[in-house]
Image 1 (tube, rainbow, N blue to C red):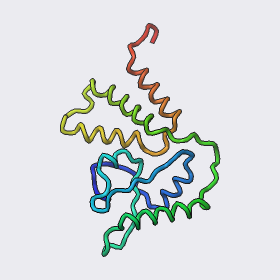
Image 2: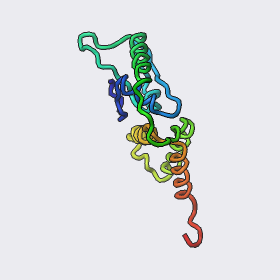
Image 3: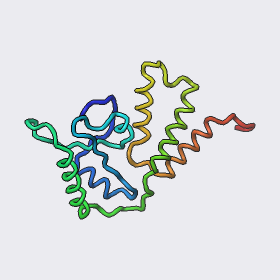
Image 4: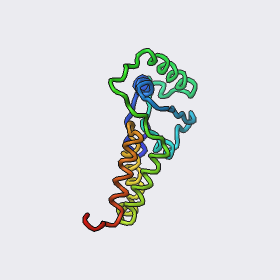
Length: 159
């Protein structure tokens, strides 16, 4: 896994397949070009990084090999998925997560949270990583947005 200044969970194809089958919402695997892999901006949008342990003598898989391996693990996991103990809400859509991130940034920017300027991009990336970890559902995102709205409003009499 290429270091990109981000902290994301790294999972195997088998683990990813299990998580996809256990998730009530839609999921996607994103593959990059064989030569360079995914761009950092695309990886920043991902919730985890899938890696395939390979023989160090060969170093990597080509795109077709990576896709077929993931497809195989996904098809194999369909019979391995455990039944859910309790009803889970589907994961929040990416648009909702983007709105949450934008809300946080809009609140933090005027307070100079992203300072010094040399660390601003890394701090934004870390915030994005925290807020896009797997598992946030629609209700949780709405709750956080409500909390942020409460914090940004002017205090009312009696508050």
